[in-house]
Length: 247
Length: 245
Image 1: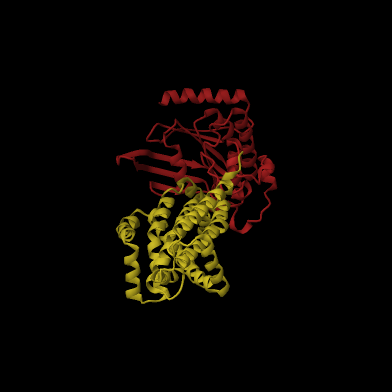
Image 2 (image 1 turned 120 degrees about the vertical axis):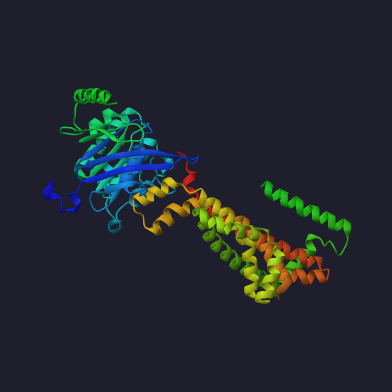
């Protein structure tokens, strides 16, 4: 990878957080992250896995550059075009599905053809509707479409499939695999679901309880997205036993 | 329909009271109608109403524009709010009459003073409502706009204004009624034309028919503006909410 580093687009994500604290409502400082180091190769798919409330979202927001208030260093991959899927869809309720997706397009291609992207995510018949008329599953798809419409060279997803029924979640995971494979975008994915992470990712990062740091890192053999149920089960058993020794 | 019956009942009650009183101080609907018609024909009524309407529109626009900007700034920034809030409280509690007198004395008995005096009276109300609206802006959508690198213009147009629209509608509706009432006072005190001026001179002549005629015409005009302009705009702003799933 070293020879490719001169090209800006092939740079990895490098994130080092020495410390991140925020003030809680009653004014006491809470330390959320401490001594976290993360490196994700360009074009690969990393999954951050940790218990609820351990600071996963905080780390993701820092990696996205949305929260500059931390001690440490951030080098984002690519030229800084970001695609982000938040935990809630965060669509503009007063704009149609199509307008929501188009607003994320890069400035010089606002007239871009969305047919293919919209087709992959099965949104074709919903473009003229308002977000309030959509089910959560559909709204999540729109949020994913919007993130890819931005032509990101860095994609961040914050538990995008939580509280969906399993059938919908499986379909959306497959669609996500298809889109990330095709665009080869560097992706950071946050989840508390180990099986989901193993299905989607090239590399797993396990987080500790608060203050969060990485306690275990593991690369998975290809092909991602096509691992069988048995393989996923075997890997998660292995991870669980490793983790139980660490914790 | 109930609205129509209710209004008709009011007019009937008025006619009855006028017939019983048989006084120059309470003319009936027919007398008032005749005066209105005569003033319409002579062009007096349209001219005076036009003068007043121009003042209403100018001071309304100034108050909404400045009030929205100030309210937005105060809602966004705690420190701006801390410094500007005492001024706002002074402004809210300043009686309309005092503002009008100050404006006429400092600026002079002219159009600028009249319009400014009305705008200043309306301003604090807009600021308070828009500050509330700005405080209620969704930080999640702000973050989304930042992540997707929306330009400042598209952030305001697609993210901020749609969220402020209900507050803008509320303050324009209440604003229009405040503004036109104060405009009449301003005209009564220091303008040589407009509905307020006519009412003042009719008052000194005890000409009740003319007072009623102008008051009713102006109320009717404001109702028309409200239902033909303000309400359709409001409906347009919230059309995304209307459709059921």
